[in-house]
Image (tube, rainbow, N blue to C red; front, side, top):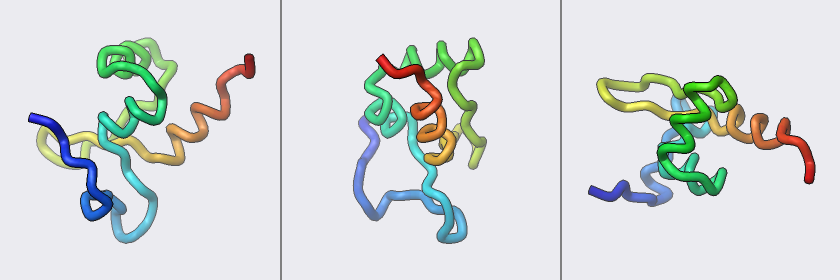
Length: 73
């Protein structure tokens, strides 16, 4: 089942920082689901927050900081 990507589905705990779904992390980084989990396993990508049973989200600020930390080509 595909995840919906609607502005109304945006997760902001207490109106604060945006939390990203796996699909959003994949799109932002341009990598596959498997690559996200591989990079988490080897410690090169921030780990997600457990926000519910079987539900995780990534802090957008942590993903953005990770992107900025990558070496420039």
